Image (cartoon, rainbow, N blue to C red; front, side, top):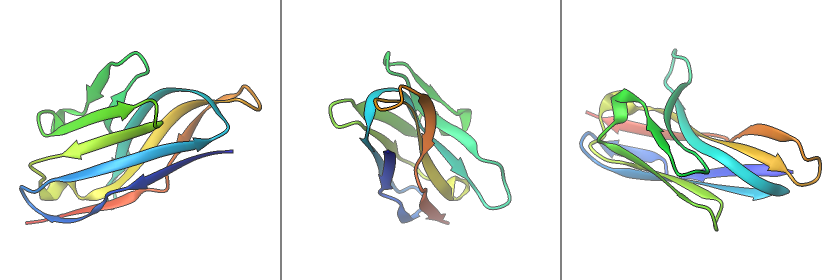
Length: 121
């Protein structure tokens, strides 16, 4: 079984910072792309940032220059450093990872349970 566990959400004032973490555990053979998505009330889930196993990163235009994604492969953890937060960043943030299961050899997309980020004006 594979699990993604997120932490680090909370309430912050506009202009503040938060750091999200997501740790993968379980029957993992390999992890390919890891990333963060978010979903605001009444809106569709959208990509925030991704980090491939080759070391490439990709960001949504709305967060470029403010958010930084990083990854610790030894800890099977992906981070999202969020600076200069704006009220429009308020959403539930979900971790995502493309993982090959060592038991079944299947490669699937896994999601964390989500962590709330609220930015007050």
